[in-house]
Length: 266
Image 1 (cartoon, rainbow, N blue to C red):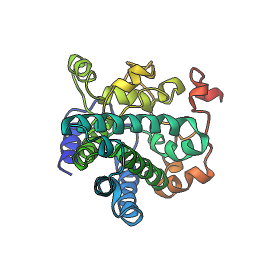
Image 2 (image 1 turned 135 degrees about the vertical axis):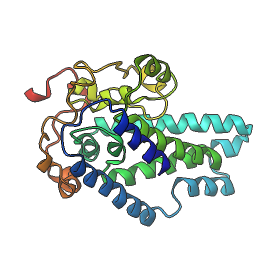
Image 3 (image 1 turned 30 degrees about the vertical axis):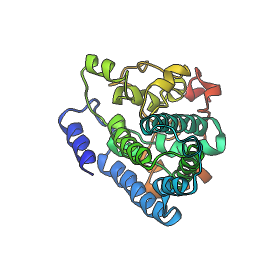
Image 4 (image 1 turned 180 degrees about the horizontal axis):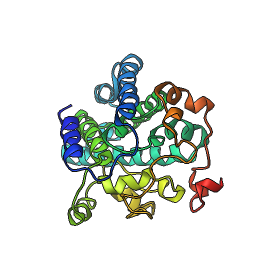
């Protein structure tokens, strides 16, 4: 909560872009989703990823519990593997049509700020937690590693979605170690080849390794269009419509197969 307030104040004092639609309407939808998702997760997964790590440790599940690696090694490798799994999951949710139907709710935001970082459909949140718990059990991640990863993931999701200004030199240095707002903002572009780039949340290395990295948006950060081409009006993305969108909305052609094409022509 403290970090959320910090980034929110930072956005207010030093914004990167001028917002184009009502912040009140957007925040009602976005914060409404995180409230709903928090309740849903507590009901669906009482133990969640941390609980799975404890269970795996007690029962000897997973690679690191089997091989008994040094603590620091297992911590470091767990953080890397968990972060890579989030990157890979993100790519898959863009590529598989039925999963894109869920994930596109995140991309329908007509602006991008800290609240966008919590704008996810409950079913996507459910699937994401299943994947995370499966990875934790498979690798036998130490409880401390899962705790650090969860805190870091939440903090970086708020930071890299933030509508905050960073000097270009500082941004260039930071993005060698973590995903910055300017780096992630490219991913929210309406242009398909930019939407299918910069998938990382914590570490920026996976995008470079797998050639999904794009340094800057074609139209620049202040002039780029945020969102999805077929959802350009606030009345199309109200709270209730967002919940129903995966079942009723058009998916468009935002998979990587259409990168390089103009979304207006699809």
